[in-house]
Length: 313
Ligand SMILES: Nc1ncnc2c1ncn2[C@@H]1O[C@H](COP(=O)(O)OP(=O)(O)O)[C@@H](O)[C@H]1O
Ligand SMILES: [Mg+2]
Image 1 (tube, rainbow, N blue to C red):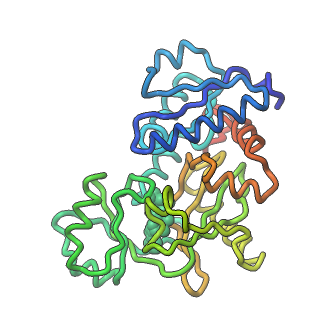
Image 2 (spheres, protein in one colour):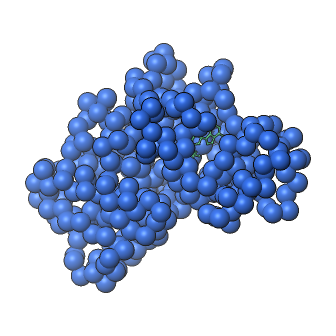
């Protein structure tokens, strides 16, 4: 598609979620990249301006650079559907489903996509019994947060109540999940293909908020070091994990490999970071795709649900 054919493009950034600051960084970079490609792109922050303004601007398409609640959960996707503005990434269903780690796992279990064993927790849960069934350590996490917020790697059953309370601050749904000891990988998805896998290493207990945004000792290894056949198999499985949730366009799938090399899928991010430290741009670069080209490719995949059934996955 040529630059004028994209028309007037809204880069949606900022928003009202806990990840607002990261989204502003992602959005500024996307905006600069699209402008560098002569696309008529304009910043639009849904926290500062309402749906009436979005409508009045008569945008031809929208690049969603929002993260977390209201931006990645189907809400803004629904607004754009109603306004008839083609938008990047997954549709309403895929966005909402991927935002909810518990329901994501239910769909994966139904479809045979491997995911760590887990249980739904309530205040009344018998934490000792859960620890026994899932084994220790285990992860306690809120179902609908990002950036490792509200998560605990639990080593002693006696710390369960505290970990539950922390997660429950962020979401009404809290899960306990078996901990997978092994290698952490992430698979970027672009237009029905998986990008090269990135291996993540941190000396911390797990890839927590610090490791993601602050620590200087987090390592990103790409190529990931797996034999090509093994990498290809995990890329294919990642694509399937993405599609069965109804996700489309682009995104990122997080997973762990256990010591025997078996993958366990953790979650899908439907509007991953696009900052200068972000993983999808890093993987794209290794596939020979510049940041500017990546942004134009993602924008070129913008759809409404009406168009070509593109959001069915
Ligand atoms: N079951 C698990 N086993 C091992 N590590 C896990 C597990 N669940 C989460 N983690 C660690 O916590 C990090 C964040 O978990 P994730 O489910 O991807 O949520 P978020 O939405 O916060 O990124 C992962 O990148 C990984 O390092
Ligand atoms: Mg993650």
